[in-house]
Length: 227
Length: 282
Image 1 (cartoon, chains in turn green, yellow):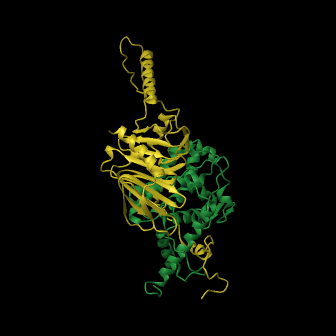
Image 2 (cartoon, each protein chain N blue to C red; image 1 turned 30 degrees about the vertical axis):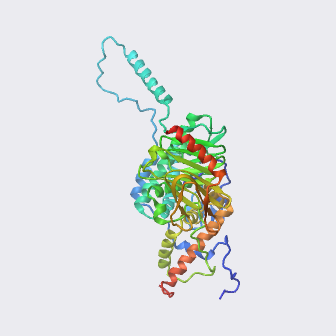
């Protein structure tokens, strides 16, 4: 569903994030992705649709937006279509962007709206019987423990995690990706969803708990032993 | 057996599971095809703009034959005047919207996609509704969409929708009610169409009726004045049918849904739009 793109500015979300670390070359998200820090005058030049700023914007955001969309939609060709739609929307809307606002929530709000538009066109909600992006209450089964995870080979772990992320309800998946992989602050994500920060923190924690539950279930296998 | 130092009740609601966070480092970000990335880059970075050194028209080597008796400056002046006239017509042409704001809309501000619009500026409101994704109103708003339906939003309502005029005919009209109340009375063109109104608690499927969906403190209340609607509570995912003069209340807690007769307080505004709809579509 469309997200209210709020006008008030906020502090730099990445600089505040505990899930990211700033270095001279940029900011590193928890996932180890280096997110370049844009120069101070960048937002004004982007809003003026300056060609160099657009090119810089594309370099900075393409992989992040594609990664987000691909994880939300799980199909390459669909992710490409939606990513294209997002960038063309951004290109058209650059002149309406208010440089006083942070870029991350603006960009990912557009991306989330486009993902939702796609789901709606596919009747995704009916197919998955899943909760909406704004709903976290249902389908949540709290993790029973918080100790170390079962030992798995890294390739196996990666494969299981990939599938487990795909299985997360949309709201949790979206929050997990934005927070962990894109290094966005809870405050920025809350601003995007028009929710309070505590609710977003809780949703992130629940997403990790749900991942643990899926991982442990996979590890146990159908008969309770190692699959 | 709970390991030493671990809370036997399990992790708290906003405690971050550091072991899962660490494990996520094994997951690589999805990478796009390089051809796609390059193609989109060219498209994105070539924002439509005109190079000032490029002439508007191709320069033709051979001089164009001039029409006898009409000096070129008059031809250019005529063309410029015609272009200006076309621009004026396009600019002042009223928006081809099927939305019409109706009496019953209170004076105040309706915010559409983040842009506040005075409710008495009906032309602007109707134009904005064409592509509206997000409507936030602090006052009562009543509007008609062609002969499809009358929509009424109570003060302090927040609704998100798919742009109605852009949808495919086969898709249902879709509303997500985030706050307040939404009332609908369908019209004659609605026949065969479907509307969905979702809240966090339930989904209402409407195929022809007068219905209200109210977000209340403990859940969502659906009141049906005429016709029938289907309700799918988020928790049970089973269809419930609600007939005219009935009410169905889904609680956010584990309490079972309640049904009964529509209460006067909820029936009155529905009667009002029903009367209005009978005037519009006798």
